[in-house]
Length: 224
Image (cartoon, rainbow, N blue to C red):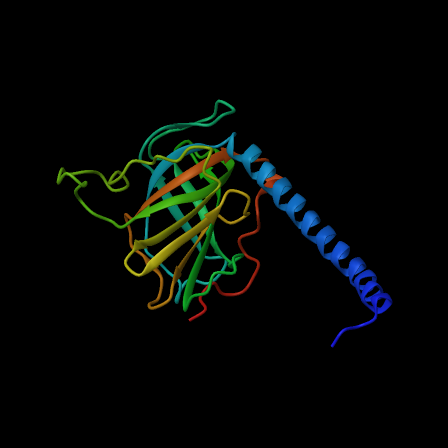
């Protein structure tokens, strides 16, 4: 059926405002994404790679938000502001609420907020987990290694997010530099468990005290 020309033009004009509105929304969303990416990149430039070993087991089914955990640095790290975190320094974190939208039967969200030197001094830090390696006594060449030194941390400030599939058996790691959380471990099959001496690879920077997120807020990180 053919419609009169004036009806066709009227329909096109009515559709135009909606098309312009949709395009404006897309441009706004694109600008927000660009700003968020720029902010994350700026944050990443102040971070340095670090490696540590988990001091004790963490279990998503048993450990609720607010539960403290510790990671022991295995190599000395010099932060951008000149602060040195020596080998053996304890990084302190908490189990927190998941801030991702990744689906899974079990989730373990972690946030590392502080470095405690052997002297007892506390340094506020921002940390992103950029890799996880299960505990083992040998490296990929079969040589004996200390806990936390099974792999090399190859993170650079060009990497703003990590999605490590099967980081440990049936568990994926998801982390973002821009997130207040250090990372979220997700399993679609089993309960998420991190064993003592699991290697935790990090990107870290010093942080003002008021930038530290609360580790006691939120609901259980276990969605099983």
